[in-house]
Amino acid sequence: MDERDLEQEQQGQTPRQEPIKWATPMQRLWAWVGVVYMVILVLLTTYALARGAYLGGIAGIMLAPALAGLGGSVILRYREGYRRGGPVVCVLLAGAAFGLAIWNLIQAVPNLLSQL
Image (cartoon, rainbow, N blue to C red):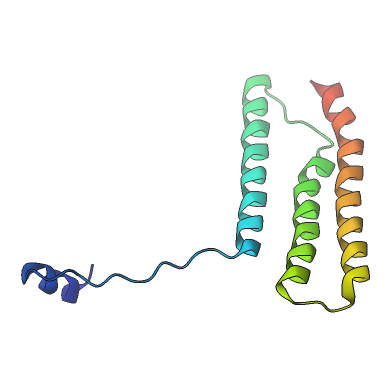
């Protein structure tokens, strides 16, 4: 609150309220990617504190959320009107990003499970 709001409140007037700015779909997508990374880091830190050693070979698990977010970004940009290249490029880029995310998970999960 600034001084003007305090003066208005003392005079019995309602203070001005700023309009709410909602997050765009792109911001929501990357916020969820951030949540996934926070969960992964909490689990990795908990494992390291419980076992006394860090897990190795987790690059695929750490890369998969970013690749999935990239694929989602391509789709959202296409739907928002940034249609550079058309639907073919959108499908190719999103497919490549999702495919690489799945491939990284397929490579990393057995390595992760072998260390547990």
